[in-house]
Length: 263
Ligand code: NDP
Image 1 (spheres, rainbow, N blue to C red):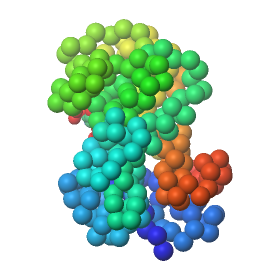
Image 2 (cartoon, rainbow, N blue to C red):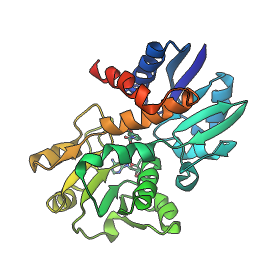
Image 3 (tube, rainbow, N blue to C red):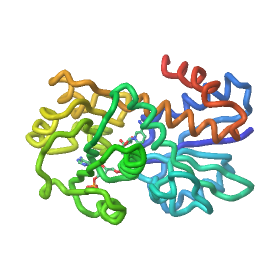
Image 4 (cartoon, helix red, strand yellow):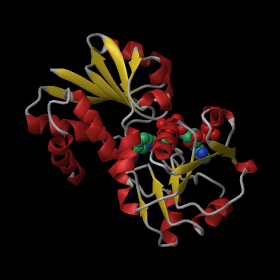
């Protein structure tokens, strides 16, 4: 029996166990996907091997810590320097980032986009900024504090704190902060957020499973929007494809994983 898990804090809200176990069951794969609450991200690698895991996902706030503890990092995760998928490859910890491509797949319905404002500067913001730029879309990063902006500045992104920022039009506003995840906070001061939403064409909140205060403000203006469910599905599909050693195609896995969203 292969064991997979998701590491994070908080983790109770995660739909990943349901999504991955649905696929394993439907394909007759002897595997089980659990939840692993983890407070101290620096312990991730030790816990991974102590549990004899075949693979794992990593969520808030440990994606950067996971990157640092991998033996090898592959694909776009090298540029992002944050990892959301881990594979045990012959005793070596291999890191990937499926959030990036998952997000691009999820925003296709918005049509052509020239620029985007990313709220937040954590692991998810890194993934989205990197992949948006790769897709020819110009991202700007806006965060409440400056500590996490260095990565973006060093990599040539426009990255600002609230007090350095002036509102202007963006095609898409994306909330990647954890504001609203387990509280009722907005990711920005309300007046600044209202100014930005009045000038945008659409909005995405990467949080899923609840209507965040951010999305409530978006809905008042009747803007096109998405919560994080489609991104969750898309990043999960790509992770499951890796968990199963690419033996099944993403298109084969998709309907099986989609079914878990009906529960
Ligand atoms: P991190 O912990 O790495 O980063 C969190 C960011 O949120 C930081 O920039 C932090 O700012 C900011 N922040 C936290 N609280 C507030 C607040 N009250 N007001 C303003 N800013 C705040 O998190 P991740 O990037 O790993 O994840 C972020 C969110 O994305 C989570 O809610 C996670 O569940 C969701 N997610 C969803 C996915 C999906 O598939 N739908 C995939 C990946 C993530 P500061 O630097 O000032 O502390």
